[in-house]
Amino acid sequence: MTLQHYLVISAILFSLGIFAVLTRRNAISILMGIELILNSCNLNFVAFSRFVTPPENIDGQIIAIFGIVLAAAEAAVFLAIILAIYREFGSIRPDEVDTLKG
Amino acid sequence: MDFKNNIESILYFTPEILLIIFAASVIILDLFVKNKDSHKVAYLSLVGLVCTLVATLYISSYIADSSLSLFWGMIRLDKFAIFFKILLVLATSATILFSLRSEEIDVGLKGEYYALLLAVTLGMFLMASSTNLLMIFISLETVSLTSYILAGFLTHSPRSSEAAFKYITYGAVASGTMLFGLSLLFGMTGTGNLAEISQQLPEVLAAGEITGLGLLIAITFILAGIGYKIASVPFHMWSPDVYEGAPIPITAFLSVASKAAGFALFLRFFYTGFQAEGILQSVDWSLLLAVVSALTMTIGNLAALPQQNVKRLLAYSSISHGGYLLMGGVLLTPEGLGAILFYLVVYLFMNLGAFFVVVLVANESGSEMIESYRGLSTRAPLVAAAMLIFLFSLTGIPPFAGFFGKWLLFTAVIGKGMYWLALIGLLNSVVSLYYYARIIKAMYFESSDEEESFSFNKSTFALLSVFVIPTIFIGILNILYNYSDKITLQ
Image: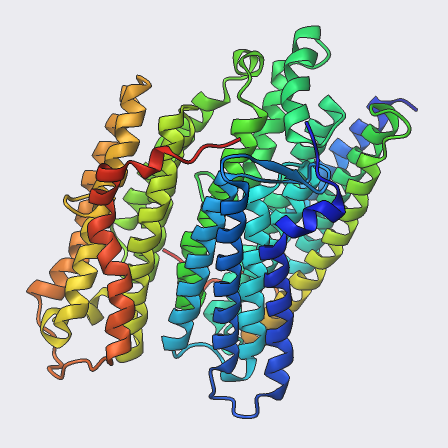
């Protein structure tokens, strides 16, 4: 396993995440896409930390841990907002949430 | 570079610590306030902001012209950071004063509201001073997550929930993309510190370890996150919807403070990380940003033309002002930096003032449409005159401060020889007069069906004059004292 393997995997994960955000018609699936994007970043950081920086330098792994924490916080806020949307609109399909336009 | 360790840094971190203490105290005080109509929590958060301001000023006199790297290089304390901290404290205080006047905020949730406002200010303080990739991302997320909640704060309003939903969907994708760009940058240099990145990048570029294209991709990804915070094209789509749906004080806050913090991050990131000659030769990111800036002001102004809702109109106008500001950011000259910082101060006063008038009219008429401004000159002459001054200043008509702000920006752009950008900026200023004049026309030349005058108390006028007086005089003062040139980035 070389650095390239990890980078290719994380690039695929990132693209799948963007794809999910752009095409899914359900707020929960969009959230899953966002999680994929954030996890691909964490994978990148850990891979770079293993292959690029010297072994005693664990900056990349620490950034990845913070990335996990922030992804969890973001998921919590997102789910809370989805709940508010469901109460107001009776649906969590983004195309039905369209009172603001112009 | 000498870093302060964690213990030594705490003294210089006092303003942020005060913000955390007061945010926690606001929540605790809220538990003991029985009368839900009382404004005790708001006053406590104002006291907190005043303490923070005093601490910031004290530290600024303590460090004078030097600059310090705190917490092993995580954040940097210099005049630039202190300038933004003062600006942000002023913007947050104004938001709290607006919230006291506004009738939108749910009375049962005051404690959370003010605690979140203090928390978002803390995030913005960190945004203005972070010099490490990790710190940049954490501060950006702190600001974003709290802003999502504040935008959706009106739990009974579908518009507000929708605004929060759109905000978080765009925001989460933008910050995820930015983190991906940061991870690429980390991989290229093997360090998270901006100063070290700026040293490493020319070396690895010269050695052929990375290509200019790879660096351009990383920069573009990072720009997604920063561009979304300052609402620049093509990451501006969220802002009209969010500004229209959010409570008016939060709209004012997002359009001024959030944008200022975004610019602080943008300037520090690009000026300290990517200004080296070796980087600019292989990746000319400043030209890329010049195009983004031209597009941002043009699209913002053109989209503002047909708007009927004043909040939405001001949202598009705020996008175009982001474009003007970005114009100074691409120059990489001290004049450009000084012009941006001065324009941010001017923009703070004139834009917050305009939003305060929107709050007042929305309270009295219950509507944010241009129709409700008809006959304002007879129903509330002073408020109409104040709005006139803010709108003329936003357009850039002399002798108001907006004119001097734009003048500094344009002279900086022309001084660098980018005539096409200055020309686009000038044309945009002319276009913007049209939509600002529609509000003025409604206020002064159309009459309303209702004749009764609005009644405002004295404190409202006092608060209004806090924004009117700087909008009139700050530009002239700047010519006399030239203080906009004295803040530098270290």
